[in-house]
Image (tube, rainbow, N blue to C red):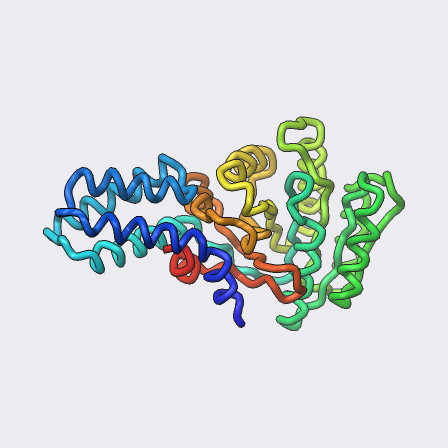
Length: 298
């Protein structure tokens, strides 16, 4: 089964719920103001933010009224198009090489596992990869990352527990430049997104990469647990203010019953989803696709 089959399965509960509510909505007399109010409620119940739901429904209303349409299929297809457009408001950055990807996020979102999967994804694309073990605060973090690096058959640069994370990044970037490595993946310590000192440490690591390898594409990706719903949007907003994020990696998409918050990430914050993880296996990660996500959602 391909990734997008897995996404459809992961979002099956949401899709079934939304589809049932949509059927009930269309059984009523006509498409009028009450219809649009209920449509907005359906989206919000699927964890689309109020602001995004209002924007989407307003676009549906304007288009449907302009076309004088009362057809269920037309309105459903229109809704899908608008949701897809919402995701595409934040285009996924095209990868170029050499590139450095720094992964940030709060504790427990699956950052270390995600880096292993991303390393494996790049290896499948025929790229050479080095992992920088810059989470030096958590005792088991380096060991866990080394396990994933071995699984993906990629290099890992590490220091002792408690070392300066920026020193690890400096060494990883320097060795990658010398070896002509295509990709550097940086693990960072899980941060509570309200801890100012930890966010400043991220900013320091950001500066090290920008200074030491100017010619490399540098993307800062926030790893988000899809099961946290709208709280993920709050995390993204705060991390974006601190380090100017380039995109999102979703984990545990197979564990959520509501995926609507993704539309808010793209529509309200302008942050694209770059990768999506839908399982525990090494290959359970691919580039995100807006069209396929909408098909799994609605």
